[in-house]
View 1 (cartoon, rainbow, N blue to C red):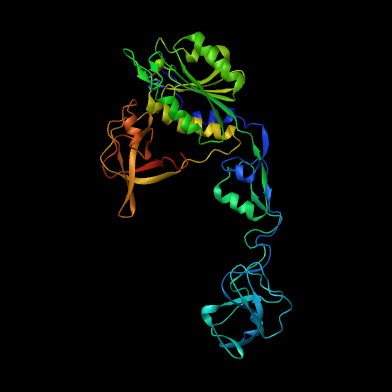
View 2: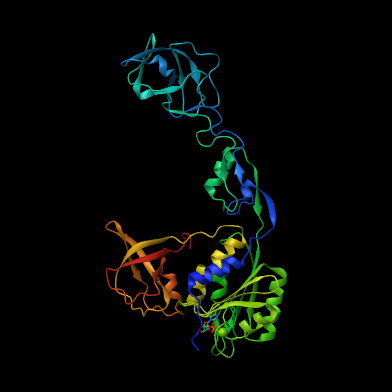
Length: 406
Ligand code: AMP
Ligand code: MG
């Protein structure tokens, strides 16, 4: 019977359809809100800026007093500093010395920049034309009161925080941070720092997975290394299910005799999906325990990371209440060829750089799925479409930039 393998896009759609946003909510102070996911729409509580303000140092005036050819003569009727407005009405034909950020007095509608002005004993001469609104930031020009600023599902950035603070907002309603359990499976695995027995290796996947997940607004719950023993795997999965909204494991989902994870998942909950039409990352498993979503990633470290980036990250973004970020693919010119047999989508690790105004990418040597070096030296993934054959030197390929939306 032909093996059933799911294409990456189809797997992503199925997983995203299964994962629901957390219903937990919290109100957090703005200073604790970086990277949190908004639960409610934020509507501007006030005009920003709150008053018409000068965008330049110069002289605030009525543009209607500056008709005809320059120069225009004005008398001086006071000074408006940032935070210390000029007082009293400004008579016709008069101007006010003004500085950046200062309130433009009532009735005035333009600022002549000081570089265009001179003064003598009779007042100010403006040597350039001045039109209504020149160099004035009108009230609400950044955002008017009552208009939407940020939508639910938005992951707050540093820049959002500044924008909200400028509107006097001190706290926001956000989604709770889901708890995500992580463990590695394999009798060969030893905690780094321990002593390697014959045939043993140090656990590389858990620290990378935990670090990748920690970039999301989640709590990572580290359940350590679990041996290739169905009882021990069951215990770890049940603990994770009790305590967490998702569990991410590596290893033990392939077809070997020591690969028990799938059977235990099918027993505790249900297995939704197994085997991707993807290289690296074929033996990925997705399912559901009684409560928690389950991601069984292949054990080869490169496969673990590729499937974590392509599937776990968007699924956990959804769990956190976000619309999963679209993967940013950019075109680059391939240096050195890539051999590829049509049939499976593939991601190779590459180094992309800008040369002569365009991006060029070279893959990072031997692409075996155990080679951590291929990732450590990479700053992008090169996408090789399912139906592509060998890619020649100079071909245009799509690259996904690591660390920027990935
Ligand atoms: P598995 O998916 O369990 O068949 O493992 C595939 C390969 O990945 C084997 O060579 C494992 O030794 C290796 N491997 C599994 N888990 C890890 C891990 N946590 N760190 C490093 N290598 C691993
Ligand atoms: Mg194993």
